[in-house]
Image (cartoon, rainbow, N blue to C red; front, top):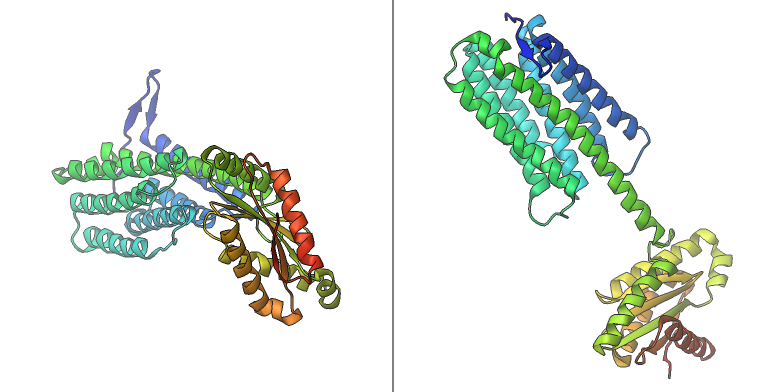
Length: 391
């Protein structure tokens, strides 16, 4: 395919030929792919990063083949280049789906990859038609870009600015490819596709999608890591429950709200009975397993709005908003019975004692904890494996 030397004028009066622009596009694509590959080699647990890395690497190769199509056989410069570009965008969109908590399936992208392979080969070798090929490929890219926009802009997602920007990028690309298909519909000059505005705009669109997309991916990775650090700082590393500091912050807000509204609140102090004996006889690994099992049982048996933390060692605290003393006693006893029936607990006959304190008007968290702790002490003295409501 002939490739004339299209010239692009810059605002400063300098003149750049299309080959220079395309070379810069290809180099930028490689650098963008390398940047994410360097991030991924750290083994970060961010969802979607692996697919983004693979997609960017494939996209860099596809863009380089497309840029160099004048010097390559059509099988590589046209057919393979478009296959790789569609596959790259499919991986990136699947990575976006993983990042927002959805399955990162490649099925739809692989179907479009097969479709673009057939179209590119058919209108290049069987029934050569540059205009038809450009229209068909542009519409497929528009469809795939629209899927990317929907993955990031659909209702129900957290309205994070980088996500909206990334979704907006795919939306702009979808509109661009629709316009490109319309522009190519009536064009009959082959050179117009080989080196004119349609070819140049397609390469620049690929450049923007890869480089700006990589930048937004890096921003999303950074935000995820910051949020993960904050999340980890508020959790107990063994059980995954809240730690004391996070529990105190949440409980303070709930108690203040209860004071203003006059609604009841109750606090449970829970302590695993004879935990040291189980820990010594079965080993620390079993003791850790027992603590984690109790945490899972508690999460299952407590109500939706209840808040629980690991208060220290084998002791836990749970705040029950909108629970009067009788309701708190029912919840505590249900939890006690569920833990005793758990298979892990049954191995060593593990049980839990519970002290319950109902919030008085204007009660602070410290006072509530003291009264619940006294009730727990009574439960221990009265034989363990029981729930005691404090006075």
